[in-house]
Length: 346
Ligand code: DAH
Image (cartoon, rainbow, N blue to C red; front, side, top):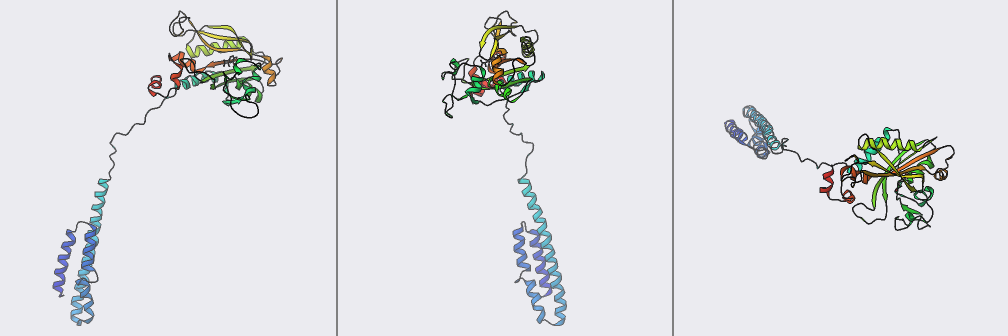
């Protein structure tokens, strides 16, 4: 090729590079115009056999053309790559203005709300929260609590037993949180001020007010010269906090094996203040809990000296409390997996 031909070849090649739209096209043109079999390379090869004049003249054109082509290839390649990147970025763009998907809002279960509320009242009085196992022994659930061997609650009709060990009735699902009284006193010296909320189990057929699983909160205070007046004052405070100030309390004699004397405590209805309404079944009073003075034999069973310390205890149904507070008609609603029911009681 003559220098003129080489120049016009280069002009055409530059125009094609300018027109190339993607990096594959540029690679192809580059191979064609600067590769081994391109006119530029061939012209460079021919230089060694050429005359000195030709070599000088053609040589400088070859170098000039090769340099222009190489720089144009580089320039177009970076332009095209930038354009390609812009296209990719535009297609991958995230639209941050799209509204997000809100996660479904959960809520604390009503029984748990009441649980927390009662616990808070006692923490305010300086009590400690204690817990115990849901699978426990006959000893902690009955024997240490002074139940005679033939007590009806021990019958299989009331208690769910676990197959474990020699004694078929030695291990059970606790029927009451009173187990924690024994467990706490076994491990701690007086003074004792504890509450213990938790799940309990009984062999019940489910109906409006019974389910085989429910929740209780136990309270226990043991110290020097604790009296029934302390029990009463403590429960008055709890009732005022739960239902508003000015509740009246009524203690009706009752029997529990582990307290003596024992009582059922009623609170004047927070809804009608005692005149009778739907909440209190027209009686003006709401049965809230069982309580009493800790029986000396229970204190002895855990190694306490009943001539030195005395105590009171109470046990309350948390589900029942939640039902009363929020006028939930059926206990089993709490344990139904139907969210339409639970969501009403947020
Ligand atoms: N554990 C009893 C029950 O489940 C409730 C109870 C009554 C607990 C009297 C007490 C108490 O601590 O003193 O029916």
